[in-house]
Structures are given as C-alpha cells and as structure tokens.
Length: 195
Image (cartoon, rainbow, N blue to C red; front, side, top):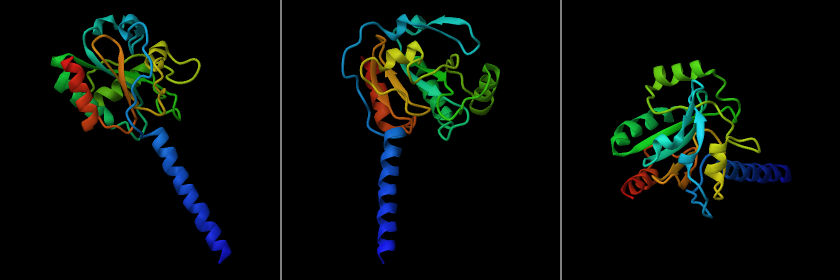
C-alpha cells in the first residue's frame, strides 16, 4: 500500500512538473517590454536567406511579426497560418520576418537552398526569410538581442513571435504555441496597424 501511494505521489509530482515545463517553454502569457529600449529594429542589418546583406530599414513604417522558424518542429505547420496572415494583412502594412534557427534540438538543419525549397514547396511561403541565426544565449544574433533588450524572454522554442510596431519598437512577445490565428495575437496586430 505504501509503495502504491509513493508511486502515485511521484507520478502526480511528475505530471505537475511536466505541465509547468510545457507552460514555461511552449505556452505562457503574452509578455510586454519591462523597460524602454533606445533605437529601432529598423536600424539593424542582417542577411537574406541567400546570404545577401539587407537593411531592415526597408520595413520601416510597417508592423512586423518576427518569428524564429524551423522545418522539422512540431510547430512547423504554423508556416501555413503565418503565410495566410501575411497574405491577408500585407496590403495594410504588415510583414512577417522569418529567421530560421537550429537552436532547439537541431530542428532546422537545412542549407539555405533546402530551407527555401521546403518553405516554398510545402507551405507556399512568400514572406521574407533571413539567414539562419542563433536566437538564444550569449552569441545570439543582434536582431534577437534587440527584441529581448526590453526585458522580454528570449525564444524558448521554435516559432516564438515578437510583434514590432511601425516605429521599430517591440510591442509584445507571444509563446511558440500561439497560433497565427490566435485571437489575442490578431487583436494585438490589428491595434498596431491602427497606430
């Protein structure tokens, strides 16, 4: 009887820990910057998926959703929803900026050519994709340094989303599990487009 009780207690503790881990990595509330950050995302430069230098200034005046993407993740089907969102709102001044990353369980192992082919052939992606970058840790890319400078959590998994206003300032961070058609995300985008 005591052994069964001990096993039940351990199983319950593991379940609670599993839920806490799931929430901390994949889900969780919308986060807003804790402090003001000088500068703008539009002041930075990066590289296209094909390796060409590009100034993010070309997106100044648009609302952007910056997403670290991966081709071999459980959330990879979000590409479809992201493309739908991009097509629907692009003419209103909205853009999605996709940054492939191999940070999480090596779920983006592809070359630029493989990534482009996968995104185009599988999901019809037309929104901008950039060079594969580190999005976590001490050596994370400067784009992700800027996105997290205001106290926002860095990506905890693929498909973490950062909403950026027309002025290039970060408005909010959305967890990886937040689908592109999530009501709270869509309301935040709509509000940013009105500002």
